[in-house]
Image (cartoon, rainbow over all chains, first blue to last red; front, side):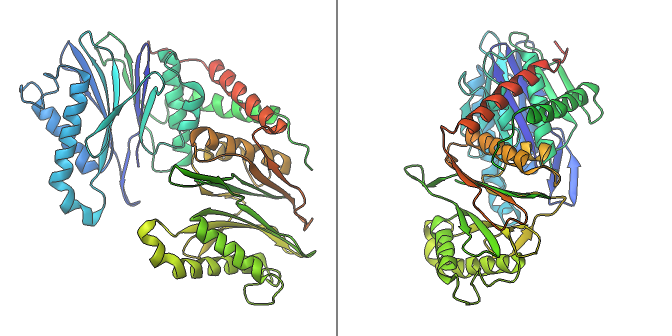
Amino acid sequence: MTYCLGILVNDGLVLAADSRTNAGVDQIALVKKLSLFDGMMDRTIALMSAGNLATTQSVTTLLEQALGSGAPNDLYAAGSMFDVARIVGDTLRAEVAREGDYVAPFGSPDGSFIVAGQIEAGPHRLFQIYSAGNFIEATQDTPFLQIGETKYGKPILDRVISHKTDLDSACKCALLSMDATIRSNLSVAPPIHLLRYESGSLSATNHRRIADDDTYFNSVRKAYAQGLRRLFNRIPNPTWG
Amino acid sequence: MTYCLGILVNDGLVLAADSRTNAGVDQIALVKKLSLFDGMMDRTIALMSAGNLATTQSVTTLLEQALGSGAPNDLYAAGSMFDVARIVGDTLRAEVAREGDYVAPFGSPDGSFIVAGQIEAGPHRLFQIYSAGNFIEATQDTPFLQIGETKYGKPILDRVISHKTDLDSACKCALLSMDATIRSNLSVAPPIHLLRYESGSLSATNHRRIADDDTYFNSVRKAYAQGLRRLFNRIPNPTWG
């Protein structure tokens, strides 16, 4: 399983992805699900993927191979983040069409992506690409998008995130959303790859790999777990006995 | 959708069920998903259901019709809670077999149940019945079982519930688990039916219907929402800017 989360706030973007991939329960590996396309000064583009790993790796590789080629699927030639989302969607659609019939007897060939970034003076934007190749975009009212194992980590986001949330708080909330998912689903696991993207920076250097022994991650997990138990105990019990 | 939750603690059982049922998004109704079989002094049995409403209502009705008949599916004649779970599983299995082929073209005929209760001097027990009619039982290490829309409400249970949790705290936690699910999924809604069963009481009188305007439920929701935001803000932000 996989959990990838993208948050769109006024100040920028926060992306977070776990690293677990598995085919059944006995073939388990760690894979980086966050890919950065950051070789040009005029844009930063990031992709996160969930679903069939063969499908999503092929899509990412095809897009990497096309970089700088000037071909229609060259992300470095795309005029807007909308065009980037279109290219990713079209590539995914073509890949599922190419492999689908062969893969289907063994399992779903489907994959999905979160696409985020900024090009030149355009706004920073966040999209979720379905396996059919179509996509939706995050808005002020819907400031986060998730793929993979999305549900366990949603309640904390629903309670905390708005488009006004500052970037550091959004990073902290992304880690807590990951933590909730990791606690409830064995097949989601660190290291977490996290990108903190400040709007206008056009740089993905603020990217880190957060392992199981990360000091900040563990301090957040512990403070939240203890605080939540204290909060729970402080709320009066019903008197229904 | 539906969310039903059963908690097994040393002191007894807490069962909670929402009331929303829907066929698509335009045929939505409220249905009570918690049924009590409490007409005998020597036992208390409770059922909660999720899935195809025609299937689960038929199962519940068949079991109600057989009460006191002495037939093999008479829950008042069952010798143990294990036997009760078997009867519910067998009835569900037969109902899915009877209806399945006719219903499948229109949607899944599947249903599932949570079965809980106590008979005479036996222990209070909690089971989850799958649509296939087989079932699992809650244990000290796995003190809660869920059916329906289970994921949003699981993190708070994972953090709070153990077999040592007292009954009042378990009631409070069940309401918070419901609250998380209601916030994240429109198709789960109050009133919540909640049973607080004290081991050895052999009585289901401590059963209440908690509507949207319930004073205690709203005070818990509000205190938790505010406390969680305060807790989140109190945890130091990362210094990754």
